[in-house]
Image (tube, rainbow, N blue to C red; front, side, top):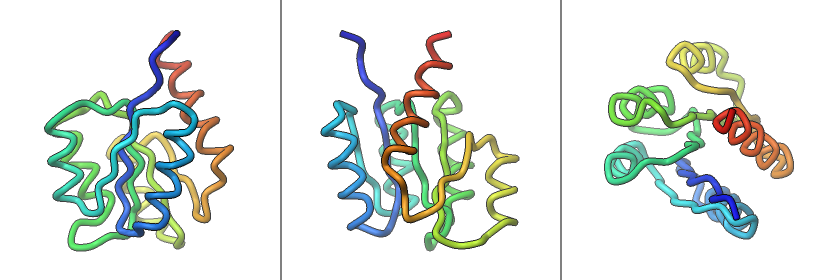
Length: 125
């Protein structure tokens, strides 16, 4: 059987992270959670992740800053930004930094899983 994607969820909303992690683990993905930028960068330095979901509005590092730091370590990880807000300037900056896409909260987990599978398909080809 093919190995499922390894995923890092970076969000200061613990409830969202736990729910997302639960659903993705149930689907067979290897999932880790980070609640802030420093923790996310540390986890990315420890091991590679295929896909990293990052909340765009966090403190003290915002999602774009986290993306930039992770890119220095793991430029092959696919980064997907998440937001509950209209933050077009941050979204544009994230896309310029190489983010794959942006998901809007509340997340549709079917959409999340479809995006993961689409990315995995592209990685295989």
